[in-house]
Image (cartoon, rainbow, N blue to C red; front, side, top):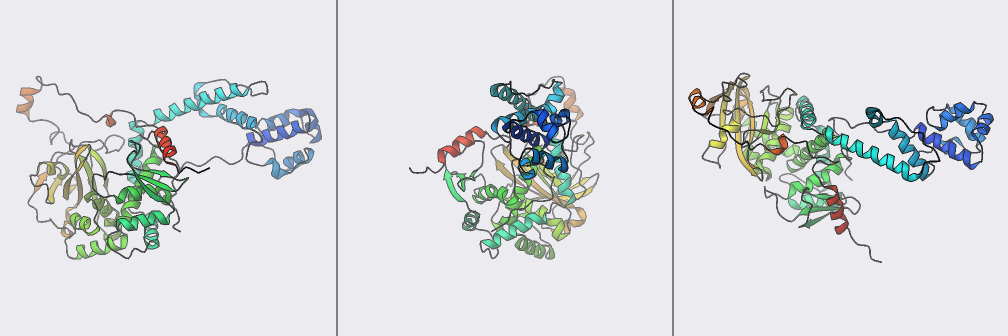
Length: 495
């Protein structure tokens, strides 16, 4: 069986201790009540002041092990029984949750006075307090998922990818193990092999025409099912959605706790998908031979493994530095000129904001990622040299289509590395002085003089650049819709 694993990307937030003082205190209190002992009686039995015992029962003090033994003996129970991690009753669980909420950051931030949780308060009252707290906490998490936080998370994640040359051995090992489990012997990975992988992992594939609109696939972990759309993806390749569906299982993903966690999981999922579709051993063998012959080509890599150009370009960035010793940069740029995603370890200077984030920034008009949109021949590879402040870089770029419009996918290297690539003889050359505004951000003076005071454009800015990020455990996903979908499609158990 293929084992799940984790990679050295941003760590998950540490979980709470399984046992806390609140649970222990409530268990002691309930056992005392069952024995019909008063606080004073038990305090006398353990030779402690009632106030000290009250602190323990209220979860404000953790007793030493010797004290626990004394309490256990007085209550005619064991230390192991006192240290059970579950609440002793539903009421106790409710009281513990309310107490924990009052000690959390929400009450502290609002400056709310704490209430004394007692038997005189009804379950409904405590449920109301807890519900209000949870809703405030949820709203706080939503406000935290702002574009600024997302841009910080993107910048931090890109820095980690750069530090590792965008190569993650743990994910490569997972891909190799899964490929071996289904008998892959080399070359492109077929649709049947992908289906065999799903079966090997305990999942069956189901194609439906009512998949929730906010999802690419839905996994039913309870019944071992993966639901996929009947219509084909924009690339026409039905393999990636299946791989992405069970990649989270292989990576050992839990529900993302914050947006940084969500981004990390997305990167891992996409990486593992590419590592399976373009197996490291086969891809490195091909690229090494191409480097020897000085004809590395993204188109050849794409065609050899029957993947999209973008997947081939992504995979090249995984292997270029770690396995071929070639520094590289990658860009996906919308036709509007804004960066969708980018990666570099070759010292190219992407446009960025003060936070170091490049997503949403505008690319220089003279860069290959922009000039390729003006090329008449959309079916041939386009190459260009660009002289920049950081040096001269060579790029190969191609136009792809998506529902959001056209975008360019570009892979580039410093001038000293272009000798390994097909297309190095290109006569296409440009100069970029960005971030100097005189390069391409300021209009020519003759046009500015005529139109500056006589124009008022209505911006067609993507709403995602202005609005807060989609909220929820899985950003942008309507969980009610997903749960209802699973309920409707869940196998019915016959009476």
